[in-house]
Image (cartoon, rainbow, N blue to C red; front, side):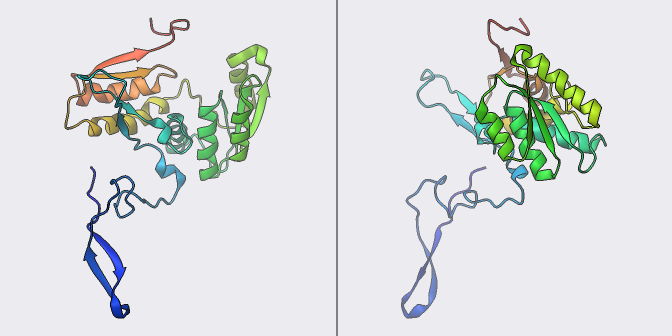
Length: 248
């Protein structure tokens, strides 16, 4: 919920005595530093993952239609895959699949690898990302900046080559492989976070449609499960490229 800004401000009164006076900020609640929600202190970067805003589009939708966007770019590494990365690691910890100090290795074209690099850095796990040499240099630099090691594969083998190499490294060295495309943690993290967030954000108004991409299927599975339970009238629409359909 949104709390109103504090109605009080501090000033130094004559004769060096402090006084508490009633004042009204000219700033919007989102900019007013006296707003209790404006400056939250976190003990870890990991607690900033999720809880992203749903923002109404002001000029793109017809006048009689309200469209909100769940802005996952507000995650610390600017991607919904931050949720997946945290989910994969905490799921593995919970189920005894990941030991303290064990190296984590995963194949990624970018966002999942960046998210895992952040989570592993925060939790103290070495991380190795396997990615095709065809993907952007900026992503490699960011992962290395976060302490990850990046192993490049031949671009001729595309995504398949990345996955095969990651599995080889995991088997050879005894590293933990999250398997982002297969793990139950993918849907689980969206059942635990994204889905309930959306239900809460729209508890005071009907949510007629939920649109999502497919990707690894985690968002669709996790959020869809929660909407079916808590908002059964919401219609779920999946979007995917017409030149690379997975469901149609």
